Image (cartoon, rainbow, N blue to C red):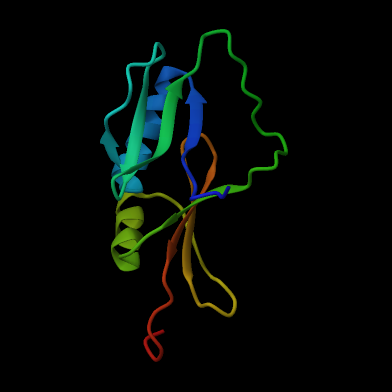
Amino acid sequence: MSILGFGHVNMRARRALLDQLYAFYTSVVGLTPGERPPFARFGYWLYAGGQDIVHLIEASPDEQRATHVITTIDHIAFRCEGAEQYQARLEQLGIPFRVASVPLTGQLQLVLKDPAGVTVELNFPAPPSGQD
């Protein structure tokens, strides 16, 4: 018995916010929309590397979601490449972000918020030695 990897993250929102999240995760983050089983509730499955990793599902009208509360989930992180291109895209779109570096590993992180206020980390390998 063993875990083989991470499956996906599921986000639920009313349709207007769901469509904003779809636009963000496809046009900003770079995920690709793909096939989704014919569930009763509307939604999108977004892919990276042939794997569905973000599921966006329309919340029912009576569904209540707590916002601006302390939860155990802090952020969503994606392994990425092309840090300069991502920075240029974020600047072009006027999306605020901060740049961080992981101690010891030198991994570069671009940290931003999605339209629902979820923190998103775009993680890039450390530059080769001498190319900081």
